[in-house]
Structures are given as C-alpha cells and as structure tokens.
Length: 416
Image (tube, rainbow, N blue to C red; front, side):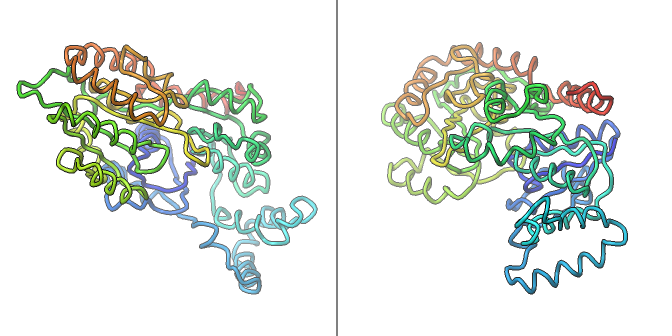
C-alpha cells in the first residue's frame, strides 16, 4: 500500500505513537510518505528516525504564517507563480480551490488555494492517515478539491473532548462528512465524537500501543537503603499537571527525605517548574532532566519504582487521549499514579495496577504516593497486573496488524 501520514510536526520525541505506527508499517513492506508542517523542536530525535531514514520520507509544507504572504499583492504574485508551475499537470484542484461559488470568501482570500498548494505535487495514496482531528479536516479539504486521493483515516488524541465542544462541532463537519474512518483512542472519546456529530458507523476505537520488547518487565523490589525513586516523563505543558506532582513530592519529602523524583521532559512551563522546585526548597531531591532519547528513557524506567502522570484538563479545555508513557511504565512493572482524566481509567485499573486521583489535587497524589512508599511489598503485584493489561490491549505488533486489517477492509468497502 501507499500510505501518507499527515501530522503537525515530525519527528517529535513525545509522539512515539506516530513513530511506532510508521516503522511498523514500513516493516510490513508498505510505502510511507510523511507530511508535516515543520520538524520537531527538540535537539535530539529517536534513533529509529535515522535507522529507517524517515527524514528522507518527510515533506515539510510549512505553517500558514510561513506559506501565505500578508501583503495582498505578494499573495497574488506568489499564487500566480504556483499556478504557472502546477496548472498544466493539476488544473482541477487549482480551479476547485479558487471556486468562489463553493468556498466564497475563503476562495477570494486564497485561503483554500494556499492550503491546497503544498500538496499539488503529491502522488495518489491508498490511505491518508491523519493524526489529530485538525489534520483530518485538512485532508478532507484536500480530497474535496482533488489535491489528494485515498481513504482518509483520522486518529483523535483527546481533542474531541475539549470543553469548548461547540467551537469544534462546525469545524469538524468536513472531516465527519468526507473522512472515511475515525479512530479515537478510547470509548470516552468515541462518545464525544458522536456528540459532535460524527456517524457511529465511521468510528472504530483503535488504541495506541508500544513495542513490548523495548520495555522488559522488571519486578519492583524495595531497596535495602530505603530509597524510593519516583519518575515523571511528560512535556512540560499545563495538561500534564506536573505542578501537582512536584507539590505532592515536596509534601512527602518532609516525612520521607529518601525519595528522589526525576522529571523527564521539556516545554514552555519548564522555567515555572524550576521556580516552583526552588521555592519549595526541594532542588536536591527533585530534578528536571529535560528530554532524553528512547534508550535513555528505558534506563530511567529501570531506575524508577513509581511513575506519576497527574494529567489535568487545561484552562482552554485541552485534554489527553491516553498517555503512552503510562503503557511504557506499566509494561516495565512500575505501579503508576494518575488521574480520573479522559481515557486514562480505560488503561489504569484503580487499586490493581496503580491508583487514580481527582485532577489538580496534590494532596490526593501525596496520599497515594505515601501509600506506595509505606507498602513497597505491593509494587510487584501492581506491576505484574499492569504488564498483563498492556500485553493484552496495547501490544504495538498486534495493533499494527489490526490497523492493516482496518485499512484493507476500508479499501475493500467493508468499512464503514
């Protein structure tokens, strides 16, 4: 199959779920092209990017600000050059993008044209797989004007559950009409998509997965010196809730000074988190490590005893899907503490593989963390339960096989 992936940025260290799908499909002999607005911002990338030569398969089409001149004359002049280049080979998508009867002001302003232009050189694909709903919307538009051909598959990662659902109901209408398969990661998000107006017939829940061979199970045992290693791996953005885990650990350090807490990740809130650590006076025991490659992350999982993933709904309504880091930690046998947030309760079995607490509640996080610190004998059983659940439901090999079956059914007309 010829498969195009449409993503925001690539490569991105935190989006191993995209990388796992792409490499899995390449290993199955399929031809892959990746369309991204821009490269990721991290200075390091996963080794698979080089191993599979993924940058050679990537087309960067730029952000709207980069593509579209603000000056109207410059905008017209640039459009004329693009039309002269592509019109002999691709007249239909160009004419469609300029159709004022279909698109009104969006055609007159050249908005539709400039969204279409980066894809005028695209080939035909069997599948166009979009990660995140807005990229599915773009693919639906491109298919409508004739710039791309192929079945449109869109994976949602929690964005359908934004609290401001009204602003998305109209926005996702093109995708719901022209998209062929919508794949949320959880039953909860499936329900949100139906509320937004997507036909249930087009929806198939398809969960994210991990390469279990990379995350071997290691039973957790208490250390003779009493040290407890706590770990968080997350982008430092509001919805990851890292502020609350820092406060929870700082609270416990007053009574359990042998806890060490390492936070792996980076993002716009890093200065704020560093200030909070300094303000709470816990810098000797709470460390911000920045981003690490996948191999280093695996070593940190081996170092850790407990994983904290205190996800929250951000002020603008942004939410998680199901954090892949929870799957990775559970696969390696770590008990986890997370929140009653989005699809997380569909992964973490409260009281069995870890604990769930309300969002934005540092005291509740501290209470559950203290329980695990005081009862290290429970770590092994919780870790085993987590590993077994991930093996059953989040094995990337099984999920990639299922994804191929869904693609084939879509192409054969069996879906939706």
